Image (cartoon, rainbow over all chains, first blue to last red; front, top):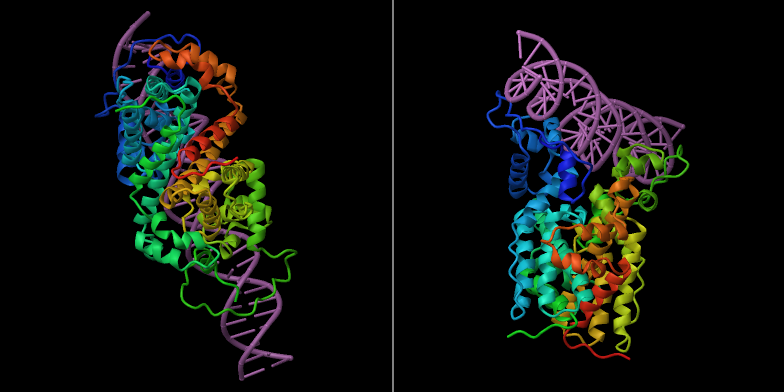
Amino acid sequence: MSPTPQERRAARHQLDTGASAPAARRGPSGGRKKPITVDAIIGTAFGIVASEGYEALTMRRVATALETGPSSLYAHVVNKEDLDELLIGRLCAEIELPEPDPATWRRQIISVCTQLRDQYLRFPGISRAAFAAAPSNLDTLRVAEGMLAILLAGGIEPQAAAWAVDSLALYVNAYSLEVSLADRRLDRKDDEWVVSRDELLRRFAALPDTFPRTKRYAAELTAGTVDDRFDFTLGLMIGGLPGARVDH
Amino acid sequence: MSPTPQERRAARHQLDTGASAPAARRGPSGGRKKPITVDAIIGTAFGIVASEGYEALTMRRVATALETGPSSLYAHVVNKEDLDELLIGRLCAEIELPEPDPATWRRQIISVCTQLRDQYLRFPGISRAAFAAAPSNLDTLRVAEGMLAILLAGGIEPQAAAWAVDSLALYVNAYSLEVSLADRRLDRKDDEWVVSRDELLRRFAALPDTFPRTKRYAAELTAGTVDDRFDFTLGLMIGGLPGARVDH
DNA sequence: GACGGACACGAACACTGTTCTACAGGCGAT
DNA sequence: ATCGCCTGTAGAACAGTGTTCGTGTCCGTC
């Protein structure tokens, strides 16, 4: 049989929940034009998140987009949490992992992080789901393995490399979530609430004298694009790793 | 008059929304034992989060704890989002900011970050609210000012210091959220789903050969307490800052 | 042809944040 | 003292949410 959603999830986490007797897959119900599949669910879910943000991702929303009721989804997906995990998994599967090269390892690790960031930002707010994803998911584990390989090729000490993978992934998640939330705030037409750079500078200037450095360095605090800050922080975390080889 | 919740929020963000004529505070309705105040709301909200986690923080939950209906809260609080911001503000207000000392600036900045982490972890999941908090909140700005002051005292170049404050705060938030979520997963009695260190090691060992480094360095990947990883990452971010003075 | 199993689905439950409406009571002005 | 206002307190309701139950309906196999 086609495995139950629970079994699918267990497989994703490399858990064998006793032998499940597989049987022949039945054909789809004849009445429907398209049968509901996990892939179809994931696909429409991505569509919703891409166009309306993660907050709009609802079981009912997915169901009606598939022209059915909410309960129909639970035959293919354990949970909303499970759906989230599937999305993160699919997203991680898109990441290209380069063959570790000791000469260009810095560029390589930055490339992976940037890919992750771009994927997260393409689906605003989805990084919130990435936080909840268990570390045993095979797709996320694949990315972690790839990052670990690059760092090790760069000569980083194993312990530092292992922890750095975690830290980098966590930071990329957090960065993407923050940017997504900030963008969302901009969209909602709380017009006098939006914070453009000029507005922020003006507000910093208006602060009381209890904030001397913030006022003094308002330019620095608001300088740079969000991408600049991303690169800066990545450089910080990568630069300090013990054992790093120099690259050309 | 006592300002409307909207005005309170605006004041928190240093926004003057036109002159609001203050008037005498009316006494509370006689029938009630304790009148509902913003402080009372914040207090019970913290109590709920501390004992049951951020997910349990509900308008109705707060209201019933105050022996009233949900709508009564909206006279003191604009939103749930607003309540979240109030919690984060109160939490940041508890942070002790040392007088910047060029000799011990590293210890100082780590101390501030650790205080933040401990506050976040005392109220599991609340760091999720910290992500959404606008950067113009006065309480969070106070902490940022304090951190900036310490970094500048350490000789860090202003641009790097400004960006580093953001990065550090973001990482502390993310770290706290991740730990909170992991703890919550442990609590829910998905018994065969929990991931102790031994279980994680066993699962890494069972991975297919597509994950050679993960299997080889499973010990390193699972090594150390969560606090060890926190200190490690902070060290990474602080160590790489340009212009840093050496301390004894 | 009849059985069984997998799938789809409508209805319902227990929640959530938020708003509308009415109601109480103390203050200021008449 | 009496009137009205205005603030703070609530009850009820609305539009959502995730999830489950029971029923139906079709397919492939016996």
